[in-house]
Image (cartoon, rainbow, N blue to C red; front, side, top):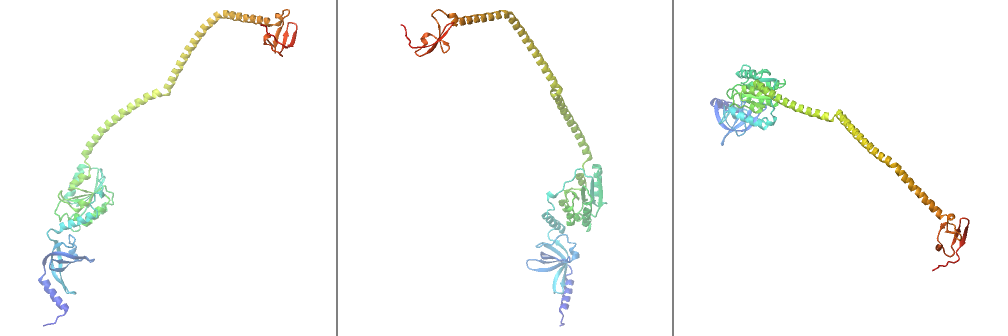
Length: 417
């Protein structure tokens, strides 16, 4: 028997395996997955009893629509090959499909869960569309029917808007990059709204709008974005990330643009309401003006002067009446006085004369000169005329006649029965 080197043996085994198992379909569970910097993917495919190493080289890995995850059941399409340096065999995978459902469906769900966890779908980050946009960017295929539908709706609905078209690929391997790049460029041109969309198709036709690169471009844009892809039943990742999802491209234009006819009707209604409101305001203000005018007239300086003049006139009249009344009363009293004056004066003179006469009589009667009789004299003490019985022993008194005055002292008093 010929002696072989290890390399020769591995080479023969490699040739045998690759010729015998040039194409295999194998189902199993993914395990120990490694995404290498080179772009290759290394993993193990196993079932409950066995395991086999697998490799998905970069070229084939780039066509993978979903991400390989631990525990995922898959079906591999590949060939058995031997890695000579280690003498281990493995499956060189040409493609990988998830068992039970399609790769695209799985990739869709994986990306949807990832972006949802990162907050791409949060309602609070959604931007509002302006009611009256001036400039809109349409990112779609310039040759597609969807563009013509959108332009037709815009022309009949609201001609005041300026529309720029960004021609992009909407399907195929380069479509996602083309769409994402157009979103980034248009976002720098101050558009009011960006519409991203295309007409209907299969899930493969619409797949560019399920790519993460497109979702990232929509999420980071500062301009409000409307996603209008396919038909009512078609939901793509861009619908969830965009600020507004439109069921169809035509519906997107109806959402973005106001209806000119409705605006005309609204203007008519507003005009009518404005006229009514203006009329009410004018009537109210006119009533207020009349009230202010009347109030002003009642409280104006002229009114106050007139009132004061009327008060002065009234006071003058009352004063004149009072003076006239006083004069009349005074005249009447004066007449009475004039009538009674002579009699009163005579009465006063008569009374005065009587008093004078009485005083003279009283003076004469008390004057010693007029009282003198032989053997009689006026008795006084301390310059006051007194009676004899008012004197007491040792009192000093005076006796006065019309010719002589004598001072004396009481030595003894005798009272006669």
